[in-house]
Amino acid sequence: MEKKILICFLLFSPFFVSAGGATLYLSPSSGTYDVSKTFAVNVLVNSGGVSINAAEGFLTFDPSEVSVVNISKQGSIFNLWTQEPSFSEGGIKFGGGVASGFSGSSGKIFQIVFRAKKAGIASVGFFEGSVLAADGKGTNILSSKTGGAYTFKEIIIASPPPRVYSDSHPASADWYSDSNPSFSWEMPSSATAVKLLLNSSPSAVPTYLFGPITEKQFSDIPDGVLYLHVSYKDQKGWSQVGHKKIMIDTKPPDSFEIEVQKNEKVVLLFKAEDDLSGIDYFKGEITAPQEEPVEFETKDSSFEIESLLPGKYMVKAWAFDKAGNSASTSLDVVVEKVYAPEITFWPEEIYPGQFLALKGSSVYPETIVSVYVQKGTETERKFDIETDEQGNWVFIDDAALEKGVYRIWADLEIDEIKSDQSEVINIEVEEMTTLGMDSITLFLATLFLALITIVISMIILIVLRKKRKESASSWQSPPA
Image (cartoon, rainbow, N blue to C red):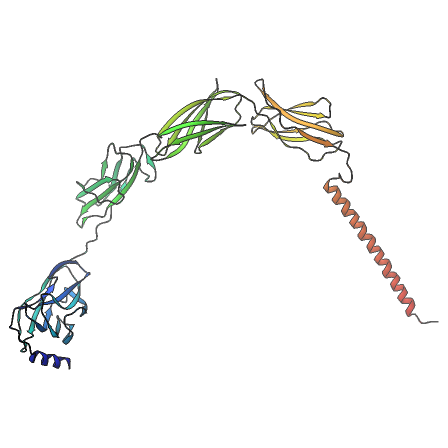
């Protein structure tokens, strides 16, 4: 029915327009596309300044070069169709019109989506066609047909990137102080050229062209995080880019100083800054007069010096950054006092006849600690005990304690410098009472009493049961 209506409209249109030169054409008419990729082509009409109301045609192409993926009439100037645009062997037929007429240079009839099938140039052209004027006579005013030629190229996958190494800067996560890095890379023997670029970008494309070299040395490279980018050329073209990260820091830490904190132990506080690679660790040596230096190393920002005897010490230290650069400083540390030992354990309860046992500690290993034991106002007894390698000591009195109150303290002396007295411990020795028995004695006594109570209760229970049985027996016996 639509076909008949369209023909009638074309034959009996009341409007008369003189014939002009209309054109059927494709847009775009050329282009370059990768094989297996799709591209869209619009079928258009240029009315040549004349009002038209119908057009038809037959597009041809080689199905071995392109395939039709989709045909769409969306946005078409036509709304009546004598031949829906459709693909058949070797071409696409179409025929349509519009009752109100169309005049313009780029009237869209429909769109085709093609897929490129193989490398080469594919032609799409109009085998036949017509454009009818809205002149009441259906005059064919088509003067030219312009097809398209499309170039298809194979998708060439670039060769894999070269593996890039650096003997001078092997670990990408480490900092180095060497500003003359050397690089090498692996690539196929068929490579004919190399492109290189050293910069701060992690993913740049190299631009400096060289022959087929496999190594390169750089000199006086600036500090920072840098990347070498390498690509080689082979039969496929330029390869994918290989990258190698290096980190260079040639400058020592920006500042370094030491503060000393004195309590019972001397603590060195390190204050250092390095803006690029950062501080890694500290190393130093402590020297007493006429003594060999004692070395230390730490990653912490402080170092505790144990058991320094009174005297003057020279401390020299180095702050190392993560590239191995260092800054140094030195100072004198004067220890003026001897620190008192500490009593860390004593009995909470003790009774006459028992022996006193103490434990303690000192900041000085293998040093004599003096322990003092005084009962009431009597003269104190003094005992000398040597500390172990950690400065700990143990004391056991060789005389049993008597009833009374005892005062206990300790001190030590080094190079005729005596320490302060430790905290005084007061212990009261009393006769043992029920309340004074230790927990084990109380437990045993309580257990014994409980057992006695249970035994007595069982005896009573047995006796009562026996009497009940005797009573029951005598009540049930008949009289004689």
